Length: 328
Image (cartoon, rainbow, N blue to C red; front, top):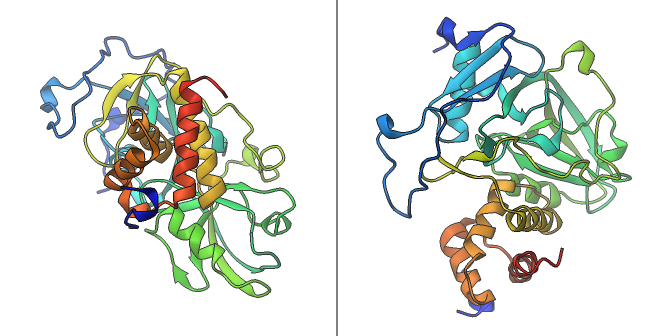
């Protein structure tokens, strides 16, 4: 089908969950599980590898141990249970750093030796912003559990001039409309459609900070990424999927890393969002496709809710091809 004709479309906790001053030294005995084929049911719990991860609250807490989750929502529930919190208090998680580092966000993969830091709700703020330009200069992502937040602020943009708005802030409300539960692309579209030369009100919740974490807001260097985007220190990762069971997989290959980064950049350019899990899914879909039309049809089947524009699909197909040929 040619591209132009595609259809658019309990707060108690077990004391054993917390350990004081424990040195994390890996997970001996963790084995590799086979990746389930399409449509196959997950293996019974007794046959799954027992993966234990260590976690802390980013603003400071004892160390907790969590296990038995298969997606982000279940992960948040496990963290909340360990620290006697409501899961709704968790905004997002970072890997191997307590700082609000958008290059270390927990996405669709967790290295088997990664340490998880949970950032919870802190100060609420309401800001009136004058939209002097069509583009506000924000890149939006979400935590996979209903909270959209700011991943990047472009230097010199409208939002860059509003110093109270920071990277990591959860967007709770726009012009009185509660957006909790909306996906990042919906929030980005809503902000883009706000009329120019008018003011709007935005309600935000910033992550709770420890005293030593209080510092000027971060936007990266020149509004761009400040790291290489790699996560994980082990040779295997736990892949969290929005549909289907979590699986233990090898660390991404060089092709996969380059292709996912490029597709994530294209998502930001076309849609104003960043989402490594979505980018990884698109690369996975396009890996064995022979032409753009075949790729477009596969995207419609796998991710039809997004209704990607044809130009974007062509660019993603080209990026995957470039990564295969090592042209990055």
